[in-house]
Length: 234
Image (tube, rainbow, N blue to C red; front, side, top):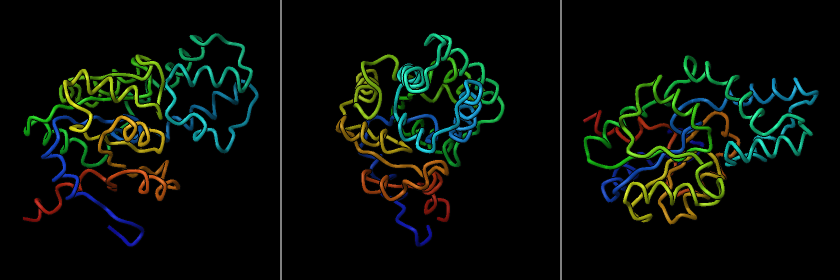
């Protein structure tokens, strides 16, 4: 870790020994995909005669896939139906998810650790189900998770706690026995509002919010490999 801030890898690993379940956000947290969504938004808005607003990502941060479609339709006067908007985004993203989106560094090692330790794992994502299925299958990681849920399945997206509470119930885990991994403030707020321990994960797309993320979360890591660095050196 350099001088820009703290890293809590070893503290997170110790904390996991007191948890029954771990719940991951997907985009920007478990997989490196946030770059793709900005490119899609720029192209999509361009098709409809709009430039990409500089603060768009912060406006839609944490919204479910359906909530984001509602926002785009209202904010940019999109004439397409909500289903058409979502279908277009799926079409634009599906091949990228299949072939261009990798796991974040060290993520598979953490997933293996959780499996070997008997700690249950779930995904709580704002993304659409079809895209989630594609990326999990392309990366071969579906079998690590007992529960996979999208924010479209609950009443409100992040920063509301609904999706995290829902996944915890499905995992049969009390909120205070869950750890959440998140990459953006809305997701961190959702995990904290659910009464869970939250570890913020660095992501290039949200690097400018680093200090905010560190202030909100219980822990902060640059990458999942930091959890195992001391053990590897030993």
